Structure formats: C-alpha cells, structure tokens
Image (cartoon, rainbow, N blue to C red; front, side):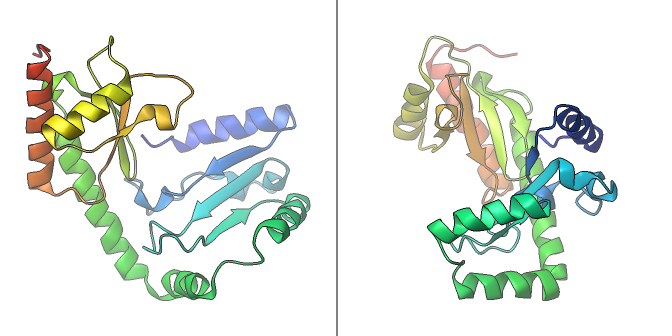
Length: 218
C-alpha cells in the first residue's frame, strides 16, 4: 500500500497545527508504482523544516544491505540533536557502504530504474496470484517490497499459522505480530525474489492450507 501524496500533505498540516514532527519512513519510496514523480510535495513548502523529518535507507534501492547507510532530512536543530545521538552509537557508517551509496546515487540511474521495474513485475505477479483469495488468504496491502496478507483462521494465533505453513506447506512467512502490538491475523510476504512461477506456487500452497483447514472460498 502506498500512501497518496495528498494524504501525506494532510498529515503534515495536522502535525504543524499541533507543533509535532511528522516522521516519514521512506525506505521504499523508489519502488512506488509512480516512482518517477515525487512521493509528496512537502519539500516545496518553505516551512517544511518546522514539521517534516524524512528517513531513507539505501539498502533496498542500491542493494547494499547491512552497511547501515541512509539519510535523515530535517531542520538544522533536529539534525544537531541527531548528530549527538549518532556520536554515542557509531562515529560513521563503514566507508564501503558510503562509497557504494555515492556511486549508486551518481552513476547508477539506469540500473536503479531497471531494478524498480523488476520489483514492479514481481509485485504484480504476487498481487495477481493472490487476487482470488486462495485458501481464504487475502491481501490487505501490497507495498513496495512486501505484501500484508490476512489469514482466514480467526481462532488460531498467527504464529501457529506461520508454523503450519512452514512445516506442512514449505512456505515461509513472517507473522504480523513481529511488527504489530496485537494479533491481527496478518502475515508479511516479501515480493523481492518471487517470479511468476513462484507466485503461482504460493497460491497453490495457500489454497491447500485453507483446504486442509476446511476453509471454503468462492
């Protein structure tokens, strides 16, 4: 799920009225369906520094995971406080990651565009494969890199569903309880390495999981 620009603007206006920061985690902004356009127009507002804090990681769009290279875009006062914190955590990111980020940002435009198109195809395959709710499993949100899928078992803990999918159906997912404060029957699936055949196989395995549990779908 991609938050529309107008909704982000509305959040920023609400934050400004209440004098609080709007922190935007934009790790997957490069993989939006309309990635050629800005994710939002907030930086065109001269007063953005009073409200907006934008976080970004280069591990996905530049394929440099684990190097901990990212950016914080904020007003000068907040940046000073962030630097104080970073000085107590790590002096700087490893040089290899910094060099890779600079190279990617300055010379890998075409490669990044190809990567975005590739992930878009994989996302479409997953979305199409799960569109008919195989086994009762339903896509709740489909974002840049991950699908949030609601499982059809209201009386079973999600962790138990994840265990069954892995042991009985060779399907590895992450329980939504790893990210949420309570159990909302959610699973998180990565689309990053899924091709068309794998997406179809996923649908088959979810269908079988639902069938074994007696789930009837239309």
